[in-house]
Length: 356
Image 1: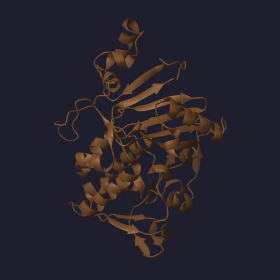
Image 2: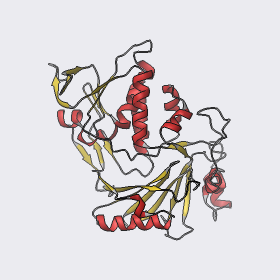
Image 3: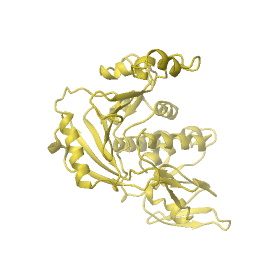
Image 4: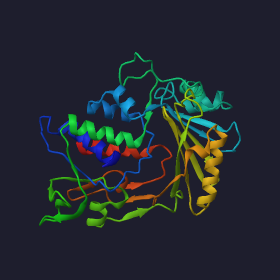
C-alpha cells in the first residue's frame, strides 16, 4: 500500500495490466492495520510524466491531492548561516547547458553572483512567488519545468481509486501473515488472514521498513550507511497558514540546523514542516525546540501545529533489491535522508525499470 504500492501498481497496470494487450493481472495486498508514513510530500519533474503515462487528469490530481507546484529547492544557511546565505537548485537546466561550460563562464565573469541566478530564470520565479505555467497551458506541459508538492496520504488514496477504478488493479485489504514458498525457492503465494493465499509470478515488496518479503522471508540484510549518513530521525508538523490568502511557496525550503536540516513544503491549505536530524548529535527535545523556533520565525504558529510526529529510520539499503521472483520498491529497499526529495522519485524509477 501507500505511495510505493499504488505508484508501482499504477505504472505496471497502465503498461501491462488487465485493460491492455498483455492483460497481466495485478493484485495489491494492503494491510488495514499498517498506516503509511505519509510525509513524502516533495517530487521530481519525473512525476509529471509518470502520472501522464498512467492516464491521470492533472487538474483532478492537483485538486484531490492538495497539490501545488514545485520549481526546485532553496537551500538556506548551509555555508555561513547568515541571512543572505542561500542558493537555488532550480528544475530548469542552465541556459547553454550541453553547448558550453557554463560553470567556467560563471566563475570567470559572474563569480560574485549565485550560479542559478546567472544561468536560470527560475529562481526569480520562485522569489516572486510565480507559477511555472498559466491556467491555459495544457495538462502536464510546462513553461518552466516543475514538479509537485502534495499531501502524501491523499495521494495514496487517490491512486488507489484510480488504479482500481480505471486500470483494473485488484485490491485485497488484508494482513499478510506469511509466505508460501515454491519448491524452487521462489515465492508461490502470500498468506493472508481472511483471503487465503494470494498467488503470483512476481512479488513486489512495498511493505516499508518491515520488508516482509525481501528482508524477513529471504533474509536479505540492510546495509547500514550510518558511517556517512548521520541523520536518522525526523520530527514532522503540519502548520496552518496565518491567513487564507497567505502566499504558497513554489519551491521546497531546506534550512540547515545544528544537527541536520528543516524542510518546508507549501501546500494550498497548509505547510508541511519537519526537522531531519542525527540523534547522536542532539536530543528530541532540542530538535523540537529548534523546529518550533523555525515555525515562529517563518510566520507560523507552533501552538496551532500540534505535537510533532516522530519518524525514526536506519539510513541504508538492502544488500540486493531483487532476489528470485521478489523485488523491493520504496523503503523496503532502503531509505536515506530526503534532502533531494528522492523517495518518491526512486519509487517511480524502480517501477519504470520493472515495467520496461
